[in-house]
Image (cartoon, rainbow, N blue to C red; front, side):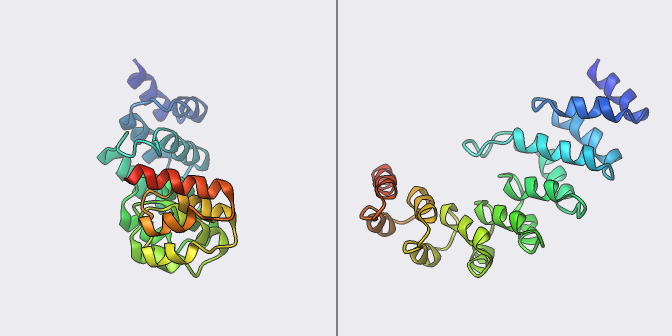
Length: 201
């Protein structure tokens, strides 16, 4: 029934109905694809598709919702120059391929680059270049398990407590860094580093 209603709405260009349907994060991803491609130039629909893909992925379960269709949609959204929100959603998605993240690393919008910096799928060579970027971008490196260790070692002494906190919670941080942060001047950072260290043991 939904498939027929969707096709009718697509044929009739009933954007209001399609936007309402896209609000459902449990909607079959094949239906999302069916809506997206005919309306790629429609900013509202593009934004809603990007939001839907964001909501259906989890930072806790990175394999959840992975599919070839998900990757196909993310690839197409990434080249949508007109919609920063779409590129933002792609930059933080755990299913975005590393080559797409590599391209987004050169985005003119610092928030897009900042999210690429936090994505574990971003290649370490790209993350290394972010170290010389704006603060908002550089700060994302501290919590990324793929950040090269030589950069994490520098971030141990960052003046920003939140950078050290993300580093203390970083699953990719080596024991030596966590040991150093266990003696951090900030009690919460020290505690987070200690907990992370115990979980590695």
